[in-house]
Length: 353
Ligand code: NAD
Ligand code: ZN
Image 1 (tube, rainbow, N blue to C red):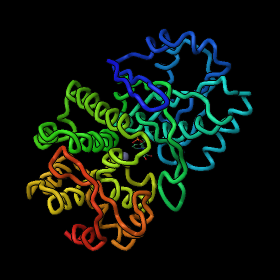
Image 2: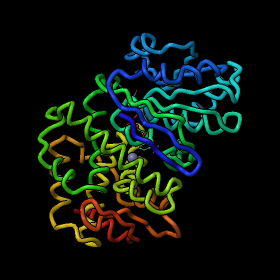
Image 3: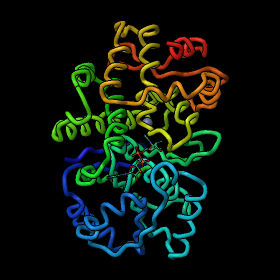
Image 4: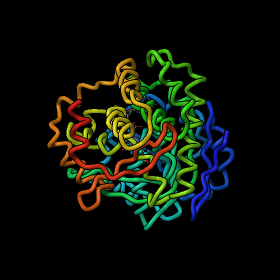
């Protein structure tokens, strides 16, 4: 299956399916043959689990650079190390980077690609459920101690290769994390799809076929929004549903100490409570999602480990906050997002509950 993504300056394809690495090589033979270097950036976990599959199916010579696992690679140090590696390997504008991993590897590699020699091509090869979101749309970034994703660029990949083979080795905690962004895509786009999740009893109950359909739908939602608004001037802000509060939780607890998706799932609950007030979302929907989060064993206790003052400080530093005004992505109805200025007091009331 192929989903096209069209932006002002580029059009690229997201290829989805099981065991599609080989066909990806056949399709891109000319491009890869022309490249002076192909560099795979991945993390130690992913490489340990998938080197064999990669080598069996990837048909070209490549250099490999390993970065620390997960969120801990989104640092200046890792960014600098990758750049140094590329220089040592005599990479040029004619080199191609492959980001093989979850959202963290994708965000780091994309940012490196956007700045090395003022920009070289890169291909996203997402290996997590969450990365159905992060690999599409061209947001790349590393973190700063003062805030998540503070240093980055909009830089689109040349292609996204979503080979479901990689998903088989995901631990349950990462399935849970990724599912939160899938649920977000449902909530901002489709009431019927959103309600399907309410029936879910546990992470283990998710069928593979069902998951693959959700991933395809999620990518379509993301691709449509990115096409309308690549640089987040308007519609793209809807994708931040659950993220203002979620990012504050992530920053308060410490990057990497809670998964991004778990923080987003927690963040969607106050966003739904505010949607019941500012939108016309039927009363009780926030509670339904809260119960779903409990059934799927998201650790909602994390909230208790942050003071509201800490969260407020981070929400004020959020990129979506201007002149101290919190701009929340909320829902008018389920599936119908809008942006609302919300006072810190209102958020505190939700937090207190
Ligand atoms: P991740 O990249 O941090 O990976 C999570 C963990 O899973 C890591 O330990 C990793 O080694 C491991 N892992 C990855 N693939 C695996 C596999 N196939 N089998 C076993 N283990 C595997 O996590 P993520 O949840 O994919 O991404 C989170 C990051 O994505 C955050 O930094 C977030 O800010 C970013 N993000 C970016 C965007 C965007 O638009 N750019 C959107 C959403 C999230
Ligand atoms: Zn997210």
